[in-house]
Image 1 (spheres, rainbow, N blue to C red):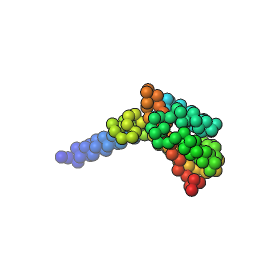
Image 2 (cartoon, rainbow, N blue to C red; image 1 turned 45 degrees about the horizontal axis):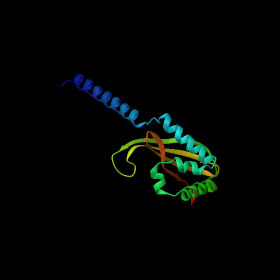
Image 3 (cartoon, helix red, strand yellow; image 1 turned 60 degrees about the vertical axis):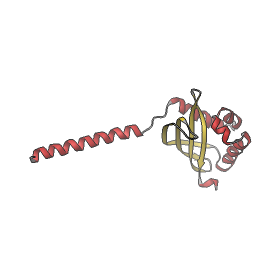
Image 4 (cartoon, rainbow, N blue to C red; image 1 turned 90 degrees about the vertical axis):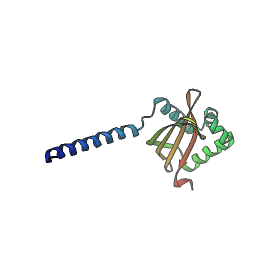
Length: 148
């Protein structure tokens, strides 16, 4: 193989790797469907307006299996008293899953936000599951040093 042929082969290999890397980056950047964004926005509004009963009643069956309405309400009240109201959220990551088994069986979206609350920074994780053709809250988790 001549120098010219090796150079062309190397260039083609490099371009192929670059192309495939570009394709991989495209597929790992999850686009959040508008329906999912609308549910998260609605839950955020409900939290801000302290409509905890509404959140519980509209949540997935998994949410209601994991906590009573009183436990759910108490958790939201504790978060509110320690962190205050949400000032802004920025999407950190979004993952779409199709699970064949486990507690989150089915079509799932997990969205992590870097969130600024009145009294500190936190990571918020909304886990939504598709039930009966609509997206419902399955889990909600907040991690912050202000909660200790």
